[in-house]
Length: 233
Ligand code: C5P
Image (cartoon, rainbow, N blue to C red; front, side, top):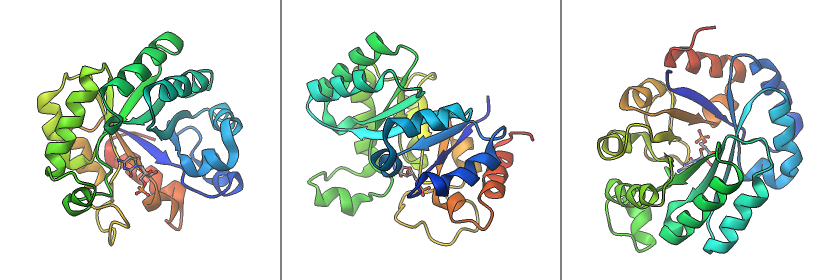
């Protein structure tokens, strides 16, 4: 299967999202609901988007003590979601507790460990006390996630080749930090690639938000990316 597109639905209201989703029904498979929409509209909105026929990636980036994260995974398990994120920097015990909760409640749910945010470069990492280069820190966190049994990771496309070389082939790599060729500036994203480059590097899924949402015709922008990835129709 070609690398697939996940639309990051980072808009303020369900009314803003509705026309985009309507136009992309039947061509787009995955929608990412992040903190902005989940905080505004809650679990009902997850069900609403799933009812439209989309697979939902719930990007809550859980990061807390092991018990709280595991209980949150249990609370989220009844929702119609296919992917859920947690921060790998929460540590081995937190990751393992989340994995056990997921296996017991939703064995089909893909738990994705977020490594280093794609908005962070070496200088930003150093400000938090992490003096390792971003790629080294991503590799360290990826090993931690793999040891805890996670089957997927979120990383920058720049680290995909490195992770493909060190992790089992069936690990799903999901990469934000995508900017189509010709896009000016990367907003707050610092470690970026084009959709085709990310696919070629070995991303399983790319996550794209603003380049689609800020386009004059968001549905056309999404379809152009799907075509660039090799999806027909
Ligand atoms: O608008 P843009 O394409 O930059 O959106 C990227 C999306 O991916 C955002 O929803 C952001 O929360 C998410 N993300 C990220 N970096 C990570 C994990 C998730 O940018 N490491």
